[in-house]
Image 1 (cartoon, rainbow, N blue to C red):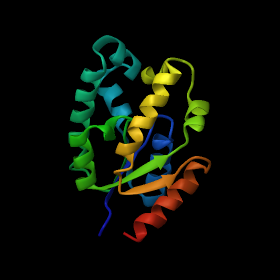
Image 2 (image 1 turned 90 degrees about the vertical axis):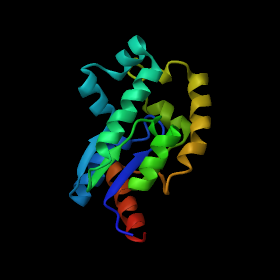
Image 3 (image 1 turned 90 degrees about the horizontal axis):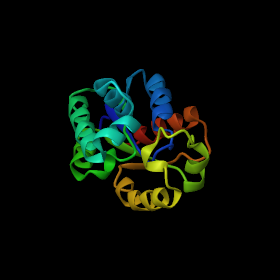
Image 4 (image 1 turned 45 degrees about the vertical axis):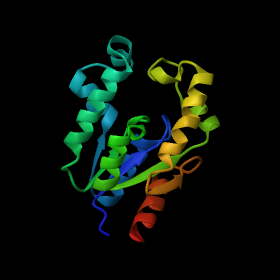
Length: 167
């Protein structure tokens, strides 16, 4: 199997954007960030989109952005924390490239999250923990799971390169 596209999936603050940049540099590929592309298209923050139009609108835009990324090759895509939850998105990503779950324990997610309101789904800790637990089953459907809890992004990128070399 020739790997020419990688989708990084996982919970918010798992390091998907940071690892995507490190991995794309290591591979000489492009890095694309779904959340950044949404903010650029909508010309506002994700928090503002959630506040004004709600999550269903946001998920629709997310689906459209993902479809625009499908034809690209030699790219590492950092998805949003909920992108892989949608069965249609998950199937498209798993057919189009290799999905890598950056698995991070919940306590570390909490430590990494800024308390500035930029993460709309992180406002309520108990609700966020429930969301974290629900999403684990979807993330487990990724092709590869990487423990991304304590290692620096460059080391995680090296682990991913090693894992895809054997595919």
